[in-house]
Length: 68
Image (cartoon, rainbow, N blue to C red; front, side, top):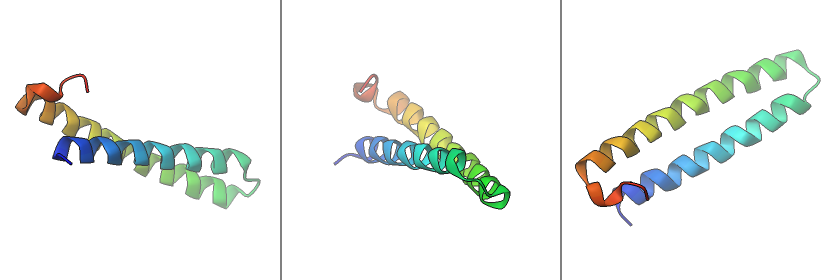
């Protein structure tokens, strides 16, 4: 598996984690839990953004990955 594929796979996993945390955040009735989930979602978005940026870098370095 190439680095590009690994980064892309991890990005998909982090987006899934973000979606799950968002779902939990919306379902909770506890304000403290809501805030904890909100912060966790923000962290996962940062990680997803970093992985997306890395994919763009890899596409520039290796044009064959562009659009995959």
